[in-house]
Length: 93
Image (cartoon, rainbow, N blue to C red; front, side, top):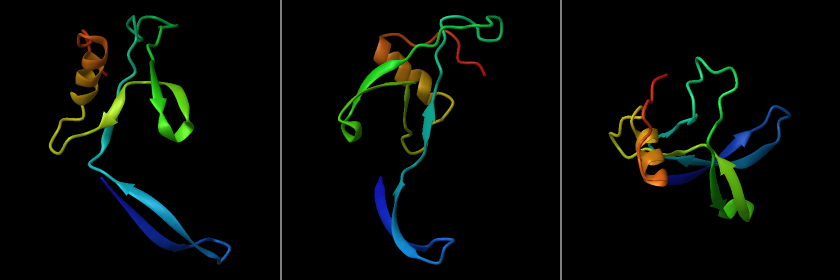
């Protein structure tokens, strides 16, 4: 990952600096305890994760930055499996 700082002109004519984080991409998964196609109100599983930027814990869906060449369709299931000890049984969608 790298951070770039660009000087930009805003619609009102003023200028300012904006930071952009460049990385190889990310992927996320919304894990459910039942089939969301057949269950009108599926239970969604969240991860409680400490985030330095907020100074506390947040509830999140499993997500992460991809490694170079990593398949974004497989990465979220692998991440979910690492966090809960076993991979999901179905990652269709």
